[in-house]
Length: 313
Image (cartoon, rainbow, N blue to C red; front, side, top):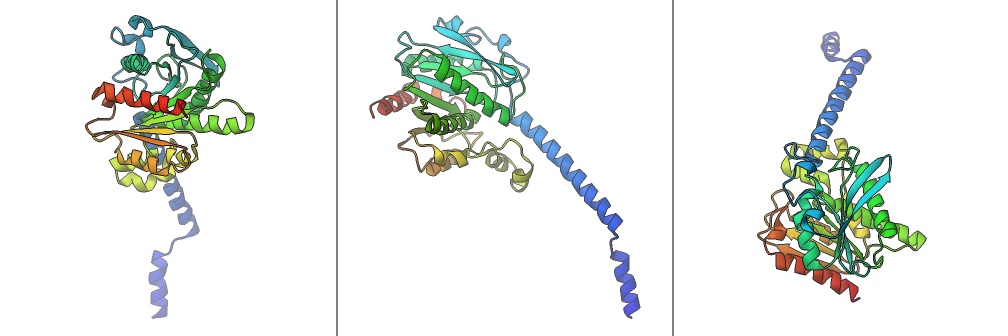
């Protein structure tokens, strides 16, 4: 009886060589899955062009601030072996006016943002800086998280060191992916200022952004909710940085956001425990990209009020 039992067990036993083969297959399958997911992640997260449309193909008035008769300077930043390009759109009193550094979304070129920049310039009465991340518009390189984080620091340093503006009155504003980029830039500048005494951003504006990339992915597909923490390279964990931000923050959210559930903006706000002041502006009918068009007076008026209120502190 015992011999028969041992024979049966032996049929199901796995030899060391077989274990190695199984381990290799699991490793190979997991590696392939990781590669596929990250390729898809990269393709979904970074979209420098949509349907093959690049900046030089934009419609009139969406190629350069010059077409709109806006006073501006071209920005060119050489760092990390690449070149970033963008615009400094400046008020007549640009040396004393507040300056907003806008960190753009994940899709399309910065020419698409010119109508938004024009409205910002006219209604908020501030200087407006926008620079394309690596791989976007006319900037060279390939977008990825570590690289764009370096870009954010380079853009920030350029604004504070190279522009003839009021360095005590600079704000960071980021929408969607740009919210994560702006938060990172803001935090890095804040921490450097503690060590060097250099000027830092006066306030932060986060709009229709996410807690972390994994939360956006898991909202689309529950399967990746389990795997995302292990196989995603572009994490953008804003939820971990926001509690460390000390200067005032304005949170702008949209009730009809079809890309990022507005509850993620609520979580970011809840996590901002150390900011000196929190402001909220919710647009119930607003969507992900064009919420500013729903009520331009109210939208830009809220930003102007935020900037002015911080300046009065």
